[in-house]
Length: 286
Length: 286
Image (cartoon, rainbow over all chains, first blue to last red):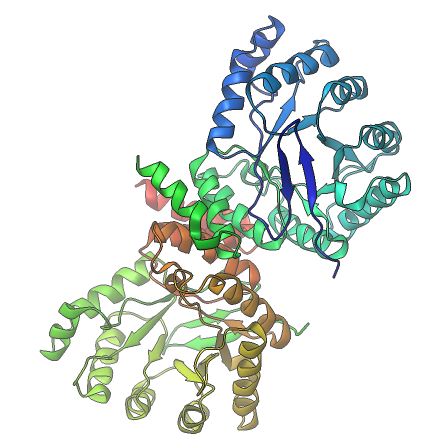
Protein backbone atom coordinates (compact mmCIF):
# COMPACT_ATOMS: atom_id res chain seq x y z
CA UNK A 1 0.00 0.00 0.00
CA UNK A 2 1.49 3.31 -1.12
CA UNK A 3 1.90 6.23 1.26
CA UNK A 4 -0.88 8.83 0.94
CA UNK A 5 0.34 11.93 -0.85
CA UNK A 6 -0.59 15.59 -0.42
CA UNK A 7 -1.35 17.71 -3.49
CA UNK A 8 -1.03 21.46 -3.03
CA UNK A 9 -2.84 23.89 -5.35
CA UNK A 10 -2.28 27.65 -5.08
CA UNK A 11 -3.80 30.95 -6.10
CA UNK A 12 -1.69 34.07 -5.73
CA UNK A 13 -2.47 34.21 -2.02
CA UNK A 14 -4.25 30.96 -1.02
CA UNK A 15 -2.96 27.44 -0.71
CA UNK A 16 -5.20 24.37 -0.68
CA UNK A 17 -3.92 20.97 0.40
CA UNK A 18 -5.60 17.78 -0.77
CA UNK A 19 -4.93 14.70 1.37
CA UNK A 20 -6.66 11.69 2.92
CA UNK A 21 -5.82 13.13 6.34
CA UNK A 22 -7.57 16.44 5.73
CA UNK A 23 -11.22 17.36 5.09
CA UNK A 24 -12.45 16.60 1.56
CA UNK A 25 -11.72 19.40 -0.93
CA UNK A 26 -14.70 20.42 -3.07
CA UNK A 27 -13.86 21.51 -6.61
CA UNK A 28 -16.87 23.62 -7.63
CA UNK A 29 -18.21 22.42 -10.99
CA UNK A 30 -20.68 25.15 -11.90
CA UNK A 31 -18.56 27.46 -14.08
CA UNK A 32 -19.09 25.36 -17.18
CA UNK A 33 -21.24 26.36 -20.17
CA UNK A 34 -21.77 22.74 -21.28
CA UNK A 35 -25.53 22.24 -21.46
CA UNK A 36 -26.20 25.78 -20.13
CA UNK A 37 -27.66 27.64 -23.14
CA UNK A 38 -28.20 30.91 -21.30
CA UNK A 39 -24.63 31.00 -19.99
CA UNK A 40 -23.34 30.26 -23.48
CA UNK A 41 -25.25 33.25 -24.88
CA UNK A 42 -23.96 35.53 -22.12
CA UNK A 43 -20.37 34.46 -22.65
CA UNK A 44 -20.61 35.06 -26.41
CA UNK A 45 -21.70 38.63 -25.63
CA UNK A 46 -18.83 39.14 -23.18
CA UNK A 47 -21.18 39.10 -20.18
CA UNK A 48 -19.53 37.48 -17.15
CA UNK A 49 -22.26 38.17 -14.58
CA UNK A 50 -23.29 34.51 -14.20
CA UNK A 51 -19.65 33.43 -14.00
CA UNK A 52 -19.08 35.90 -11.16
CA UNK A 53 -22.26 34.86 -9.35
CA UNK A 54 -21.43 31.15 -9.70
CA UNK A 55 -17.91 31.77 -8.41
CA UNK A 56 -19.05 33.64 -5.31
CA UNK A 57 -21.97 31.30 -4.54
CA UNK A 58 -19.82 28.19 -4.78
CA UNK A 59 -17.06 29.60 -2.59
CA UNK A 60 -19.64 30.69 0.00
CA UNK A 61 -21.15 27.21 -0.10
CA UNK A 62 -17.80 25.53 0.56
CA UNK A 63 -15.88 25.10 -2.72
CA UNK A 64 -12.13 25.31 -2.03
CA UNK A 65 -11.16 25.21 -5.72
CA UNK A 66 -13.21 26.41 -8.72
CA UNK A 67 -13.28 24.51 -11.99
CA UNK A 68 -13.37 26.88 -15.01
CA UNK A 69 -14.51 25.58 -18.38
CA UNK A 70 -14.97 27.81 -21.46
CA UNK A 71 -16.33 25.24 -23.87
CA UNK A 72 -18.82 27.33 -25.83
CA UNK A 73 -19.43 25.96 -29.37
CA UNK A 74 -17.85 28.13 -32.09
CA UNK A 75 -16.28 30.51 -29.57
CA UNK A 76 -12.58 31.51 -29.46
CA UNK A 77 -11.81 29.27 -26.50
CA UNK A 78 -8.32 30.60 -25.60
CA UNK A 79 -9.59 34.19 -25.50
CA UNK A 80 -12.79 33.27 -23.65
CA UNK A 81 -11.03 31.11 -21.05
CA UNK A 82 -8.54 33.92 -20.34
CA UNK A 83 -11.36 36.43 -19.92
CA UNK A 84 -13.30 34.12 -17.60
CA UNK A 85 -10.24 33.49 -15.45
CA UNK A 86 -9.51 37.24 -15.24
CA UNK A 87 -13.05 37.90 -14.02
CA UNK A 88 -12.86 35.13 -11.44
CA UNK A 89 -9.43 36.23 -10.18
CA UNK A 90 -10.89 39.70 -9.64
CA UNK A 91 -13.55 38.50 -7.22
CA UNK A 92 -12.23 35.45 -5.35
CA UNK A 93 -8.95 34.16 -3.98
CA UNK A 94 -9.54 30.42 -4.22
CA UNK A 95 -7.23 28.45 -6.53
CA UNK A 96 -8.56 27.41 -9.95
CA UNK A 97 -8.89 24.19 -11.86
CA UNK A 98 -8.40 24.97 -15.57
CA UNK A 99 -10.76 22.70 -17.47
CA UNK A 100 -10.10 22.49 -21.20
CA UNK A 101 -9.30 20.02 -23.96
CA UNK A 102 -7.89 22.87 -26.08
CA UNK A 103 -4.10 23.04 -25.83
CA UNK A 104 -3.86 26.67 -26.94
CA UNK A 105 -6.49 27.67 -24.36
CA UNK A 106 -4.65 25.72 -21.68
CA UNK A 107 -1.34 27.40 -22.46
CA UNK A 108 -2.92 30.88 -22.52
CA UNK A 109 -4.58 30.19 -19.18
CA UNK A 110 -1.43 28.81 -17.53
CA UNK A 111 0.57 31.80 -18.80
CA UNK A 112 -1.89 34.16 -17.18
CA UNK A 113 -2.57 32.23 -13.96
CA UNK A 114 -0.59 33.65 -11.01
CA UNK A 115 -0.55 30.50 -8.82
CA UNK A 116 -0.21 26.74 -9.15
CA UNK A 117 -3.28 25.60 -11.05
CA UNK A 118 -4.87 22.19 -11.23
CA UNK A 119 -5.36 21.23 -14.90
CA UNK A 120 -8.42 19.22 -15.96
CA UNK A 121 -7.29 17.07 -17.73
CA UNK A 122 -4.98 14.67 -19.46
CA UNK A 123 -5.86 11.05 -20.17
CA UNK A 124 -4.14 7.95 -21.54
CA UNK A 125 -4.44 9.04 -25.18
CA UNK A 126 -1.01 9.47 -26.76
CA UNK A 127 -1.68 12.87 -28.34
CA UNK A 128 -3.04 14.22 -25.03
CA UNK A 129 -0.03 13.02 -23.05
CA UNK A 130 2.39 14.51 -25.59
CA UNK A 131 0.66 17.87 -25.85
CA UNK A 132 -0.32 18.51 -22.25
CA UNK A 133 2.27 16.98 -19.90
CA UNK A 134 5.10 19.30 -21.08
CA UNK A 135 2.86 22.32 -20.32
CA UNK A 136 2.13 20.99 -16.83
CA UNK A 137 5.85 20.60 -16.25
CA UNK A 138 6.74 24.00 -17.72
CA UNK A 139 4.20 25.91 -15.62
CA UNK A 140 4.62 23.82 -12.46
CA UNK A 141 0.92 22.94 -12.37
CA UNK A 142 -0.83 19.85 -11.00
CA UNK A 143 -2.84 17.67 -13.35
CA UNK A 144 -5.90 15.44 -13.35
CA UNK A 145 -5.46 12.18 -15.28
CA UNK A 146 -8.63 10.49 -16.53
CA UNK A 147 -8.53 6.70 -16.79
CA UNK A 148 -9.53 6.49 -20.45
CA UNK A 149 -7.46 6.20 -23.59
CA UNK A 150 -7.64 5.78 -27.35
CA UNK A 151 -9.91 2.76 -26.79
CA UNK A 152 -12.40 4.72 -24.65
CA UNK A 153 -13.31 4.15 -20.99
CA UNK A 154 -12.43 0.61 -19.95
CA UNK A 155 -15.01 -1.53 -18.17
CA UNK A 156 -12.65 -3.21 -15.72
CA UNK A 157 -10.90 -1.94 -12.62
CA UNK A 158 -7.62 -3.49 -13.78
CA UNK A 159 -7.61 -1.59 -17.06
CA UNK A 160 -8.41 1.70 -15.33
CA UNK A 161 -5.53 1.00 -12.96
CA UNK A 162 -3.28 0.31 -15.96
CA UNK A 163 -4.16 3.65 -17.59
CA UNK A 164 -3.56 5.46 -14.29
CA UNK A 165 -0.14 3.78 -14.19
CA UNK A 166 0.63 4.83 -17.75
CA UNK A 167 -0.29 8.48 -17.05
CA UNK A 168 1.71 8.48 -13.82
CA UNK A 169 4.77 6.92 -15.49
CA UNK A 170 4.71 9.36 -18.38
CA UNK A 171 4.23 12.39 -16.13
CA UNK A 172 6.85 11.47 -13.55
CA UNK A 173 9.32 10.59 -16.35
CA UNK A 174 9.38 14.23 -17.49
CA UNK A 175 9.74 15.47 -13.92
CA UNK A 176 6.19 16.11 -12.72
CA UNK A 177 6.12 15.09 -9.03
CA UNK A 178 3.85 12.14 -8.23
CA UNK A 179 1.96 14.22 -5.67
CA UNK A 180 0.97 16.68 -8.42
CA UNK A 181 -0.93 13.97 -10.29
CA UNK A 182 -4.59 13.51 -9.34
CA UNK A 183 -6.46 10.60 -10.91
CA UNK A 184 -10.12 10.61 -11.99
CA UNK A 185 -11.23 6.95 -12.34
CA UNK A 186 -14.48 8.13 -14.03
CA UNK A 187 -18.04 7.42 -12.97
CA UNK A 188 -20.40 6.23 -15.71
CA UNK A 189 -24.18 6.06 -15.47
CA UNK A 190 -25.53 3.06 -13.56
CA UNK A 191 -28.71 3.58 -15.58
CA UNK A 192 -26.81 2.57 -18.71
CA UNK A 193 -24.28 0.18 -17.20
CA UNK A 194 -25.37 -1.99 -14.27
CA UNK A 195 -21.95 -2.32 -12.58
CA UNK A 196 -20.80 1.30 -13.10
CA UNK A 197 -21.03 2.22 -9.41
CA UNK A 198 -19.07 -0.77 -8.17
CA UNK A 199 -16.39 -0.34 -10.86
CA UNK A 200 -16.00 3.35 -9.98
CA UNK A 201 -15.70 2.58 -6.23
CA UNK A 202 -13.29 -0.32 -6.72
CA UNK A 203 -11.19 1.77 -9.13
CA UNK A 204 -10.90 4.59 -6.59
CA UNK A 205 -9.80 2.06 -3.97
CA UNK A 206 -7.31 0.28 -6.22
CA UNK A 207 -5.67 3.43 -7.62
CA UNK A 208 -5.49 5.12 -4.23
CA UNK A 209 -3.94 2.02 -2.66
CA UNK A 210 -1.47 1.37 -5.47
CA UNK A 211 -0.10 4.88 -5.99
CA UNK A 212 -1.14 6.90 -2.92
CA UNK A 213 -2.31 9.70 -5.23
CA UNK A 214 -5.29 11.93 -4.63
CA UNK A 215 -8.51 11.02 -6.42
CA UNK A 216 -11.08 13.30 -8.02
CA UNK A 217 -14.37 12.40 -9.70
CA UNK A 218 -17.46 14.08 -11.09
CA UNK A 219 -19.87 11.78 -9.30
CA UNK A 220 -23.28 13.03 -10.40
CA UNK A 221 -23.17 11.07 -13.65
CA UNK A 222 -23.53 7.86 -11.66
CA UNK A 223 -27.29 8.34 -11.20
CA UNK A 224 -28.15 9.49 -14.74
CA UNK A 225 -31.42 7.92 -15.88
CA UNK A 226 -32.54 6.82 -12.37
CA UNK A 227 -35.12 8.70 -10.21
CA UNK A 228 -34.22 10.65 -7.05
CA UNK A 229 -30.73 11.33 -8.30
CA UNK A 230 -29.50 13.55 -5.47
CA UNK A 231 -30.16 10.82 -2.88
CA UNK A 232 -28.14 8.32 -4.93
CA UNK A 233 -25.37 10.88 -5.50
CA UNK A 234 -25.18 11.66 -1.78
CA UNK A 235 -24.80 8.01 -0.78
CA UNK A 236 -22.33 7.33 -3.58
CA UNK A 237 -20.29 10.36 -2.49
CA UNK A 238 -19.93 9.01 1.05
CA UNK A 239 -18.93 5.59 -0.24
CA UNK A 240 -16.44 7.10 -2.70
CA UNK A 241 -14.82 9.19 0.05
CA UNK A 242 -14.61 6.02 2.14
CA UNK A 243 -12.74 4.37 -0.78
CA UNK A 244 -10.23 7.21 -1.28
CA UNK A 245 -11.92 10.08 -3.15
CA UNK A 246 -10.31 13.26 -1.77
CA UNK A 247 -11.36 16.11 -4.12
CA UNK A 248 -14.74 15.55 -5.84
CA UNK A 249 -15.82 17.89 -8.63
CA UNK A 250 -19.34 18.78 -7.53
CA UNK A 251 -21.81 21.57 -6.92
CA UNK A 252 -21.57 22.55 -3.24
CA UNK A 253 -25.00 24.21 -3.49
CA UNK A 254 -26.63 20.76 -3.74
CA UNK A 255 -27.33 20.41 -0.05
CA UNK A 256 -27.82 16.66 0.26
CA UNK A 257 -24.55 15.84 -1.52
CA UNK A 258 -22.68 18.53 0.39
CA UNK A 259 -23.98 17.16 3.69
CA UNK A 260 -22.83 13.68 2.68
CA UNK A 261 -19.32 15.04 2.12
CA UNK A 262 -19.29 16.69 5.56
CA UNK A 263 -20.76 13.59 7.23
CA UNK A 264 -18.22 11.36 5.50
CA UNK A 265 -15.37 13.57 6.76
CA UNK A 266 -16.83 13.34 10.26
CA UNK A 267 -17.06 9.53 10.04
CA UNK A 268 -13.49 9.28 8.70
CA UNK A 269 -12.14 11.33 11.62
CA UNK A 270 -11.28 14.35 9.44
CA UNK A 271 -13.46 16.89 11.22
CA UNK A 272 -12.06 17.53 14.69
CA UNK A 273 -14.74 18.29 17.31
CA UNK A 274 -17.27 18.04 14.41
CA UNK A 275 -16.48 21.72 13.77
CA UNK A 276 -17.31 21.71 10.06
CA UNK A 277 -20.43 19.59 10.56
CA UNK A 278 -21.81 21.79 13.30
CA UNK A 279 -20.85 24.99 11.42
CA UNK A 280 -22.81 23.84 8.37
CA UNK A 281 -25.72 22.77 10.60
CA UNK A 282 -25.93 26.25 12.13
CA UNK A 283 -25.76 27.87 8.69
CA UNK A 284 -28.69 25.72 7.52
CA UNK A 285 -30.75 26.62 10.59
CA UNK A 286 -30.33 30.38 10.03
CA UNK B 1 -8.76 -12.29 1.61
CA UNK B 2 -11.35 -14.84 2.78
CA UNK B 3 -14.21 -15.97 0.56
CA UNK B 4 -17.50 -14.19 1.32
CA UNK B 5 -19.90 -16.45 3.18
CA UNK B 6 -23.68 -16.68 3.06
CA UNK B 7 -25.65 -16.85 6.31
CA UNK B 8 -29.15 -18.31 6.07
CA UNK B 9 -31.81 -17.53 8.70
CA UNK B 10 -35.22 -19.21 8.61
CA UNK B 11 -38.70 -18.88 9.98
CA UNK B 12 -41.06 -21.83 9.61
CA UNK B 13 -41.75 -20.87 6.00
CA UNK B 14 -39.33 -18.11 4.99
CA UNK B 15 -35.62 -18.20 4.32
CA UNK B 16 -33.40 -15.11 4.32
CA UNK B 17 -29.88 -15.17 2.91
CA UNK B 18 -27.28 -12.66 4.02
CA UNK B 19 -24.36 -12.17 1.65
CA UNK B 20 -22.19 -9.47 0.08
CA UNK B 21 -23.59 -10.48 -3.30
CA UNK B 22 -27.23 -9.93 -2.31
CA UNK B 23 -29.16 -6.81 -1.27
CA UNK B 24 -28.50 -5.64 2.29
CA UNK B 25 -30.70 -7.39 4.89
CA UNK B 26 -32.38 -5.04 7.35
CA UNK B 27 -32.83 -6.43 10.86
CA UNK B 28 -35.67 -4.31 12.29
CA UNK B 29 -34.63 -2.92 15.67
CA UNK B 30 -37.89 -1.50 17.00
CA UNK B 31 -39.23 -4.41 19.10
CA UNK B 32 -37.13 -3.46 22.08
CA UNK B 33 -38.45 -1.95 25.33
CA UNK B 34 -35.08 -0.40 26.24
CA UNK B 35 -35.75 3.31 26.78
CA UNK B 36 -39.44 2.91 25.75
CA UNK B 37 -41.38 3.49 28.99
CA UNK B 38 -44.80 3.12 27.41
CA UNK B 39 -43.93 -0.18 25.77
CA UNK B 40 -42.51 -1.43 29.09
CA UNK B 41 -45.80 -0.67 30.83
CA UNK B 42 -47.80 -2.40 28.10
CA UNK B 43 -45.63 -5.51 28.22
CA UNK B 44 -45.93 -5.71 32.01
CA UNK B 45 -49.72 -5.75 31.57
CA UNK B 46 -49.54 -8.45 28.90
CA UNK B 47 -50.53 -6.01 26.15
CA UNK B 48 -48.75 -6.84 22.88
CA UNK B 49 -50.45 -4.29 20.60
CA UNK B 50 -47.35 -2.14 20.13
CA UNK B 51 -45.24 -5.25 19.50
CA UNK B 52 -47.66 -6.34 16.79
CA UNK B 53 -47.81 -2.88 15.23
CA UNK B 54 -44.01 -2.52 15.27
CA UNK B 55 -43.63 -5.95 13.69
CA UNK B 56 -46.03 -5.23 10.83
CA UNK B 57 -44.79 -1.68 10.20
CA UNK B 58 -41.15 -2.76 10.04
CA UNK B 59 -41.84 -5.66 7.67
CA UNK B 60 -43.89 -3.37 5.42
CA UNK B 61 -41.05 -0.85 5.45
CA UNK B 62 -38.49 -3.44 4.37
CA UNK B 63 -37.20 -5.36 7.41
CA UNK B 64 -36.31 -8.93 6.38
CA UNK B 65 -35.59 -10.09 9.95
CA UNK B 66 -37.07 -8.75 13.20
CA UNK B 67 -35.01 -8.31 16.34
CA UNK B 68 -37.00 -9.19 19.49
CA UNK B 69 -35.83 -7.94 22.85
CA UNK B 70 -37.80 -8.45 26.10
CA UNK B 71 -35.55 -6.50 28.45
CA UNK B 72 -38.13 -4.97 30.79
CA UNK B 73 -36.70 -4.22 34.26
CA UNK B 74 -38.02 -6.61 36.94
CA UNK B 75 -40.03 -8.66 34.44
CA UNK B 76 -39.84 -12.45 34.05
CA UNK B 77 -37.73 -12.26 30.89
CA UNK B 78 -38.01 -15.90 29.75
CA UNK B 79 -41.80 -15.82 29.99
CA UNK B 80 -42.10 -12.38 28.41
CA UNK B 81 -39.74 -13.18 25.52
CA UNK B 82 -41.70 -16.36 24.74
CA UNK B 83 -45.00 -14.44 24.77
CA UNK B 84 -43.60 -11.72 22.50
CA UNK B 85 -42.27 -14.27 20.03
CA UNK B 86 -45.61 -16.12 19.99
CA UNK B 87 -47.43 -12.90 19.17
CA UNK B 88 -44.97 -12.02 16.41
CA UNK B 89 -45.08 -15.51 14.91
CA UNK B 90 -48.87 -15.18 14.73
CA UNK B 91 -48.76 -12.10 12.49
CA UNK B 92 -45.65 -12.25 10.32
CA UNK B 93 -43.54 -14.86 8.55
CA UNK B 94 -40.14 -13.14 8.63
CA UNK B 95 -37.36 -14.88 10.59
CA UNK B 96 -36.49 -13.53 14.03
CA UNK B 97 -33.36 -12.36 15.76
CA UNK B 98 -33.60 -13.34 19.44
CA UNK B 99 -32.02 -10.53 21.41
CA UNK B 100 -31.27 -11.34 25.05
CA UNK B 101 -28.45 -11.53 27.54
CA UNK B 102 -30.52 -13.91 29.69
CA UNK B 103 -29.53 -17.54 29.10
CA UNK B 104 -32.81 -18.99 30.41
CA UNK B 105 -34.78 -16.63 28.16
CA UNK B 106 -32.62 -17.57 25.20
CA UNK B 107 -33.12 -21.28 25.75
CA UNK B 108 -36.89 -20.89 26.20
CA UNK B 109 -37.05 -18.84 22.98
CA UNK B 110 -34.92 -21.27 20.97
CA UNK B 111 -37.02 -24.21 22.21
CA UNK B 112 -40.16 -22.48 20.99
CA UNK B 113 -38.84 -21.01 17.74
CA UNK B 114 -39.84 -23.12 14.73
CA UNK B 115 -37.04 -22.02 12.34
CA UNK B 116 -33.35 -21.18 12.38
CA UNK B 117 -33.04 -18.06 14.50
CA UNK B 118 -30.29 -15.49 14.63
CA UNK B 119 -29.19 -14.98 18.25
CA UNK B 120 -28.14 -11.52 19.45
CA UNK B 121 -25.59 -12.02 20.99
CA UNK B 122 -22.45 -13.60 22.32
CA UNK B 123 -19.22 -11.66 22.89
CA UNK B 124 -15.64 -12.41 23.87
CA UNK B 125 -16.42 -12.75 27.61
CA UNK B 126 -15.64 -16.25 28.86
CA UNK B 127 -18.92 -16.79 30.70
CA UNK B 128 -20.90 -15.68 27.64
CA UNK B 129 -19.01 -18.02 25.31
CA UNK B 130 -19.46 -20.95 27.70
CA UNK B 131 -23.16 -20.40 28.33
CA UNK B 132 -24.40 -19.40 24.88
CA UNK B 133 -22.35 -21.21 22.22
CA UNK B 134 -23.58 -24.70 23.26
CA UNK B 135 -27.19 -23.48 22.91
CA UNK B 136 -26.47 -22.13 19.42
CA UNK B 137 -25.01 -25.49 18.48
CA UNK B 138 -27.82 -27.49 20.07
CA UNK B 139 -30.61 -25.57 18.35
CA UNK B 140 -28.78 -25.06 15.03
CA UNK B 141 -29.10 -21.28 15.25
CA UNK B 142 -26.85 -18.55 13.87
CA UNK B 143 -25.19 -16.13 16.26
CA UNK B 144 -24.02 -12.53 16.41
CA UNK B 145 -20.63 -12.04 18.07
CA UNK B 146 -19.89 -8.59 19.51
CA UNK B 147 -16.24 -7.51 19.51
CA UNK B 148 -16.02 -6.77 23.22
CA UNK B 149 -14.81 -8.88 26.13
CA UNK B 150 -14.13 -8.81 29.87
CA UNK B 151 -12.02 -5.68 29.33
CA UNK B 152 -14.85 -3.80 27.56
CA UNK B 153 -14.92 -2.49 23.98
CA UNK B 154 -11.39 -2.12 22.62
CA UNK B 155 -10.32 1.12 20.96
CA UNK B 156 -8.23 -0.42 18.20
CA UNK B 157 -9.16 -2.26 15.03
CA UNK B 158 -6.58 -4.95 15.78
CA UNK B 159 -8.09 -5.80 19.15
CA UNK B 160 -11.61 -5.97 17.73
CA UNK B 161 -10.26 -8.30 15.04
CA UNK B 162 -8.65 -10.42 17.79
CA UNK B 163 -11.93 -10.75 19.69
CA UNK B 164 -13.75 -11.66 16.47
CA UNK B 165 -11.12 -14.36 15.93
CA UNK B 166 -11.57 -15.67 19.48
CA UNK B 167 -15.37 -15.91 19.09
CA UNK B 168 -15.02 -17.58 15.69
CA UNK B 169 -12.47 -20.08 16.96
CA UNK B 170 -14.54 -21.00 20.00
CA UNK B 171 -17.75 -21.34 18.00
CA UNK B 172 -16.30 -23.36 15.11
CA UNK B 173 -14.47 -25.63 17.60
CA UNK B 174 -17.77 -26.90 18.96
CA UNK B 175 -19.16 -27.39 15.47
CA UNK B 176 -20.98 -24.12 14.66
CA UNK B 177 -20.37 -23.50 10.94
CA UNK B 178 -18.35 -20.36 10.16
CA UNK B 179 -21.14 -19.04 7.94
CA UNK B 180 -23.51 -19.07 10.93
CA UNK B 181 -21.37 -16.55 12.79
CA UNK B 182 -22.16 -12.87 12.16
CA UNK B 183 -19.84 -10.31 13.72
CA UNK B 184 -20.87 -6.91 15.13
CA UNK B 185 -17.72 -4.73 15.37
CA UNK B 186 -19.70 -2.14 17.44
CA UNK B 187 -20.20 1.53 16.68
CA UNK B 188 -19.54 3.94 19.52
CA UNK B 189 -20.57 7.60 19.63
CA UNK B 190 -18.31 9.95 17.68
CA UNK B 191 -19.58 12.67 20.00
CA UNK B 192 -17.76 10.96 22.88
CA UNK B 193 -14.84 9.42 20.98
CA UNK B 194 -13.41 11.35 18.02
CA UNK B 195 -12.20 8.34 16.00
CA UNK B 196 -15.22 6.07 16.65
CA UNK B 197 -16.49 6.25 13.07
CA UNK B 198 -13.19 5.42 11.46
CA UNK B 199 -12.53 2.56 13.89
CA UNK B 200 -15.98 1.08 13.21
CA UNK B 201 -15.51 1.31 9.42
CA UNK B 202 -11.97 -0.10 9.49
CA UNK B 203 -13.09 -2.90 11.83
CA UNK B 204 -15.90 -3.89 9.45
CA UNK B 205 -13.41 -3.96 6.59
CA UNK B 206 -10.74 -5.91 8.47
CA UNK B 207 -13.09 -8.56 9.92
CA UNK B 208 -14.95 -9.03 6.64
CA UNK B 209 -11.67 -9.39 4.73
CA UNK B 210 -10.04 -11.73 7.25
CA UNK B 211 -12.89 -14.16 7.87
CA UNK B 212 -15.40 -13.59 5.05
CA UNK B 213 -18.21 -13.54 7.63
CA UNK B 214 -21.29 -11.39 7.46
CA UNK B 215 -21.28 -8.18 9.49
CA UNK B 216 -24.08 -6.57 11.47
CA UNK B 217 -24.10 -3.29 13.41
CA UNK B 218 -26.50 -0.99 15.18
CA UNK B 219 -25.23 2.15 13.47
CA UNK B 220 -27.34 4.91 14.97
CA UNK B 221 -25.16 5.19 18.07
CA UNK B 222 -22.40 6.68 15.91
CA UNK B 223 -24.06 10.14 15.84
CA UNK B 224 -25.10 10.33 19.51
CA UNK B 225 -24.49 13.86 20.84
CA UNK B 226 -24.13 15.50 17.39
CA UNK B 227 -26.88 17.49 15.61
CA UNK B 228 -28.75 16.25 12.52
CA UNK B 229 -28.22 12.63 13.47
CA UNK B 230 -30.20 10.99 10.70
CA UNK B 231 -28.07 12.64 8.01
CA UNK B 232 -24.88 11.36 9.68
CA UNK B 233 -26.41 7.89 10.16
CA UNK B 234 -27.43 7.74 6.49
CA UNK B 235 -23.94 8.59 5.22
CA UNK B 236 -22.29 6.26 7.73
CA UNK B 237 -24.63 3.45 6.67
CA UNK B 238 -23.57 3.79 3.01
CA UNK B 239 -19.89 3.83 3.99
CA UNK B 240 -20.33 0.82 6.29
CA UNK B 241 -22.07 -1.19 3.54
CA UNK B 242 -19.19 -0.24 1.24
CA UNK B 243 -16.79 -1.67 3.85
CA UNK B 244 -18.65 -4.98 4.30
CA UNK B 245 -21.73 -4.42 6.51
CA UNK B 246 -24.37 -6.84 5.18
CA UNK B 247 -27.18 -6.92 7.80
CA UNK B 248 -27.53 -3.67 9.79
CA UNK B 249 -29.81 -3.57 12.82
CA UNK B 250 -31.84 -0.45 12.11
CA UNK B 251 -35.30 1.07 11.94
CA UNK B 252 -36.49 0.79 8.32
CA UNK B 253 -39.10 3.49 9.00
CA UNK B 254 -36.32 6.10 9.19
CA UNK B 255 -36.54 7.14 5.57
CA UNK B 256 -33.16 8.80 5.06
CA UNK B 257 -31.22 5.84 6.46
CA UNK B 258 -33.35 3.34 4.57
CA UNK B 259 -32.78 5.25 1.32
CA UNK B 260 -29.03 5.19 1.98
CA UNK B 261 -29.19 1.38 2.29
CA UNK B 262 -31.07 1.07 -1.00
CA UNK B 263 -28.74 3.56 -2.73
CA UNK B 264 -25.68 1.73 -1.41
CA UNK B 265 -27.00 -1.57 -2.78
CA UNK B 266 -27.57 0.13 -6.12
CA UNK B 267 -24.02 1.53 -6.14
CA UNK B 268 -22.57 -1.87 -5.17
CA UNK B 269 -24.35 -3.59 -8.06
CA UNK B 270 -26.74 -5.50 -5.77
CA UNK B 271 -29.98 -4.12 -7.15
CA UNK B 272 -30.49 -5.42 -10.68
CA UNK B 273 -32.28 -2.93 -12.97
CA UNK B 274 -32.56 -0.67 -9.88
CA UNK B 275 -35.73 -2.62 -9.08
CA UNK B 276 -35.62 -2.08 -5.31
CA UNK B 277 -34.62 1.58 -5.65
CA UNK B 278 -37.39 2.38 -8.11
CA UNK B 279 -39.95 0.35 -6.12
CA UNK B 280 -39.17 2.35 -2.98
CA UNK B 281 -39.26 5.60 -4.98
CA UNK B 282 -42.78 4.79 -6.24
CA UNK B 283 -43.94 3.88 -2.73
CA UNK B 284 -42.66 7.27 -1.43
CA UNK B 285 -44.45 9.15 -4.22
CA UNK B 286 -47.82 7.57 -3.45
